[in-house]
Length: 140
Length: 136
Image (cartoon, rainbow over all chains, first blue to last red):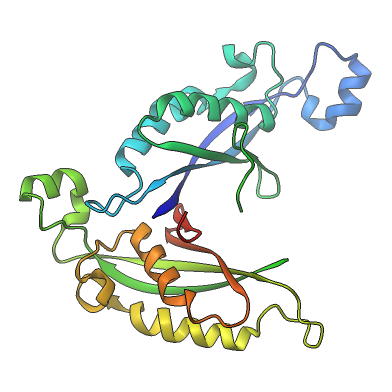
């Protein structure tokens, strides 16, 4: 029996959307208020979905404690309460939620052993969400 | 194809225990969830069915019928119950969120005459849920 386990985590961070390949005017047109040079913040909500067979001995797809530990150490500690633009991860990449979701997926793909990482979903606000599943199509 | 989702809630208690494990193993694997007196959750079930729209009614499925099936097969069975002791599926299977989702799918599968089960989603807490799409 294959099932999909999702847990939601939260972290707060600031960022500024700006591309050095665009002119000042183009940055303003493209990013609007998100181009404020002082940055702005979000309470991000991150859903991590892992998939696998339900272990008949434990009734679980994956040990929640192990999932929490992996997300805490590799994601929350790394991005929580940070200015994303100051991080090495975003030296050359605009820290949009698209890029952040993709980055989080890539980090967790390496961190989570013995289980398939299905997708990550990042809520930037209550109205904007970004999902990434690597090369796979998302299942809803 | 239209996907229709109906949501309902039920409150239940459970605990996690495998009689084939030693007491130490049960404690190590399940932690506080191994408390034999149980602990509780307000579960939310999101049931998604799929089907074509009936041209006469405009429905994929009559929601009154779906609600009745959910009441009979899920809420009457699990709401305000101690899952380990009162629900037949959990006499042997551990009532984890995964196994609850599978049990609900198996209960509902044969009961839907119109529309087809697409997904059972069970929230154990607002931040933790399991999706089950049937055998794959």
